[in-house]
Image 1 (cartoon, rainbow, N blue to C red):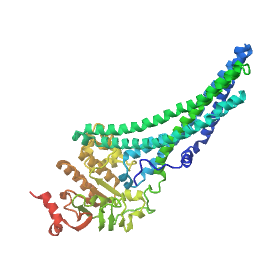
Image 2 (cartoon, one colour):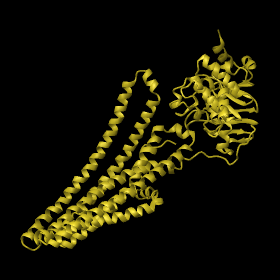
Image 3 (spheres, rainbow, N blue to C red):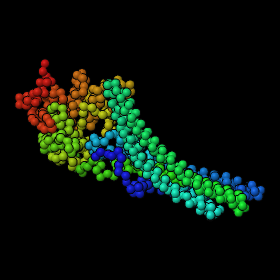
Image 4 (cartoon, rainbow, N blue to C red):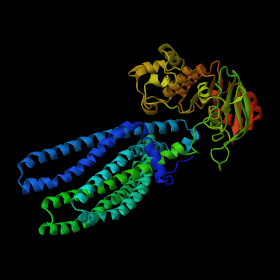
Length: 585
């Protein structure tokens, strides 16, 4: 299944419940943060409340006792508020980081077990962006919700001060607050929509970069740096364009809400000033009221910012849960039978397979058997279905119809671990990790001892060149083994397969990309690997399979003939044509 760049918008409430459920294991931390939040909110109200006694008792009545007590109270309130803010922010951010860790683990664990077909349909950069970028957005969701709660509590405390000081003025000032809910809702929807597009565009850029950097030699070989620069600039400009619109909506919301608040404040200043001038109210009462009112509009702005953060998190959550929850994105199914040596027989029975619903089948009714100890080669023109055929044995793909069986059981009945560990696969381009030579050879057999590992390297004709590397077996070989030659990479892969000691060996054109000298050495290593093992070999160069027990000739996804080399030369025109093309003087 191909992932959507912008998944369908889900119910905000259901999505929020799912996002916030990841914070449940950290309820003690969150409870502590909530307590700190209540304290911080109360301190904001206390700050506004202290303005009246400060003005009336100190500056107007000139009370020396108040002069000693009230400044100390103000300092104490701010210290308590700062401590509460620290505890709240620390506990919520730590909880967010724990959720980030958990979500990344879940995503990675789900993706790593998905079938190969999923990776054929989806670009690696897109998957990387979901694990790295989208998850980071979700982390901020509950802290933002707590900020909303804190600001709401702060508003309640300040409203209490406002109504306590002057109920009539408070009613005038607060009547405009409901008007602020519309921009709160409107801008939140816009930001969420743009966030989905922004996340999708970041995925596209990640995919582009991963592809270009992986294929940098091709880019340079064709001198296409300028073209790829233009391509990147276009993608980058689109990302900036979306982000610019996000910024516009985000920044528009604050001044609009401030303007609405200013209407209330303007009326209050006129009416409250009039009351002070007429002697109905004191300056302390009015300024305490005004302090609380001004402080009241600040939480409203912060509510808006926190809401925008939550909308971004929900947009990212939609993309994450598409991977985690979609019924179409399922991990590889496996049987419950452990494969147990020895290998006796591999059988294909009327196997048909295609890569997509509307695509021409890559294999059509393929049937053959191979027995223990047999060496079977598969040859034919490019696009004939050879590589597809062998990918069905380790269940990288499953047939659309027919059956692939080992020792009389369909491969689907075996556990994937036992099935794949019984197979040794050496392909034309073996993947080597950016790790040491030792770690690459021992991949899958981390507990192997030094003598066994070096014996495998010697049998693969790799030990001598490894010893000449700067740090020998501890040498880092770079991404995809870039610091080694093609022949050296193949010999490392053969050593890895030897160490695995497989029951059935699968070779997929293991020497076709090598020069003559490297091929000769690798062929010797392959002979050591194939010795006394059942082998299924795809060969581009017929010289490597002339001694096979049986050669299967494929064309257009079908087996058109099979037999030993000499008989195929006599009875199979396609095989004879392939042979003459390679061996004619």
